[in-house]
Length: 76
Image 1: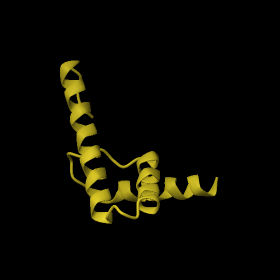
Image 2 (image 1 turned 135 degrees about the vertical axis):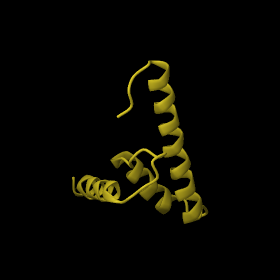
Image 3 (image 1 turned 45 degrees about the vertical axis):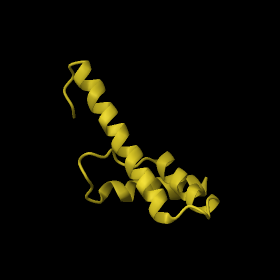
Image 4 (image 1 turned 45 degrees about the horizontal axis):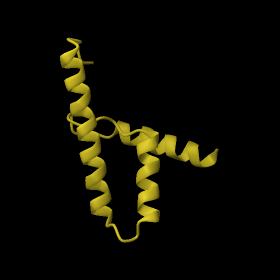
């Protein structure tokens, strides 16, 4: 329970930071995945893990935009 609270607070703190409009805000699950990747993959560099996270969030944002555009919805 304490770990989930920590991840929630960390994700909320990251949402308050200015970010690229092309990215979705980081979620609790994404924060957990980054934390575990950093601990479990000592061969991967921190730069590689962060670039992968940025790519994934950008890809999700593009998919969301395409989905709404195809359905003729207004983006928030």
